[in-house]
Length: 421
Image 1 (spheres, rainbow, N blue to C red):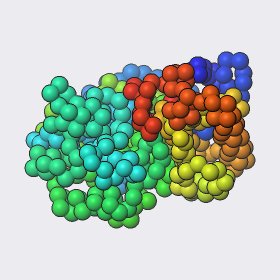
Image 2 (cartoon, rainbow, N blue to C red; image 1 turned 60 degrees about the horizontal axis):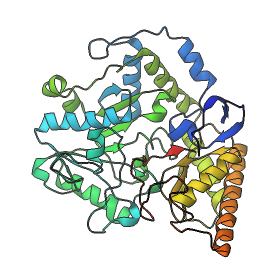
Image 3 (spheres, rainbow, N blue to C red; image 1 turned 180 degrees about the vertical axis):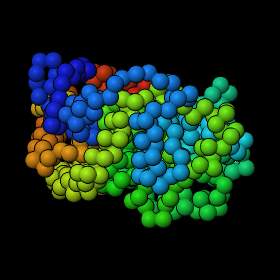
């Protein structure tokens, strides 16, 4: 399947270079555009800001100051550091706590909820694709280290050398929320046992109303992190992220001097102005509440599919197939029918429409999705009847352009968050 070239979009739809229309159930790719890819409100904000470059480590802008004040109020956190990407913010979180405590390690690498308790541990988190963010997720090591090596440890491992902990409110590729027992209860226990090891909820993908609550962690009673990461939707589809946390740590003199809580485009006036607009609009248009309401409609629309699926908490759903090949075929069938969904490169297809999508669009998209699933099921059944099916979870892996992987595994080199299909 060739990569789609998008030329424009409006009101929940995008258009390719041949002007074919697609209903976008990906919010611009992977949940980064809360109002669609060419939202008139965001374009108006951009037109009203005189663009200029200003190195955020040395200067403030009025837009950045306003955004940090809004983020403090929104999150209840005392301090905010602005960045361009979620990976930057995630690494900054680790850096800040390493400098503050003098301890190198981080707890991370939450498991697929279906594999909790399996030995050995199966880290399956996503905090970005830079080296540091991959290490903290347990996906990469360093020379001489195993993937969960000297810096990244399983939760509760070696607390005396651990500076902080990080987790996501749900399993990124499947959109499945974590189990209360044992996972969430264990996090709460660790917070009580080790109060000097702060926890961070990575809300880059799940925050800003995606799950029907302002932040995904709010679905878990009594779970309160000391830090929050924001990104994707915060920038309205443009590069903006934030690390929010306690002043005691983020504004500590050693942290300011040595943790480098800034990047080239921190506080860029264009991005900051859009971030302010996104927060204001989510609040004024009650889009968190709308996400919850439409999420219930989404769940109702998907109730009659036989595939296991995770939905009902906001405009978010993950659908599980026999394997990555069948999932990819469903992505392709949706695209041919004019619907874009997220290809995770694994056995799940994920959807996350923009927050201001209409109820009719939710219904229409689910109708297309179900027709695409039925088409692929019929195709696979016909292959089985004729003996042409090659296996591998719904087809021949190599023929489909997917590297050989375990049935429920992840093709090497494919992002867990997904690719737009």
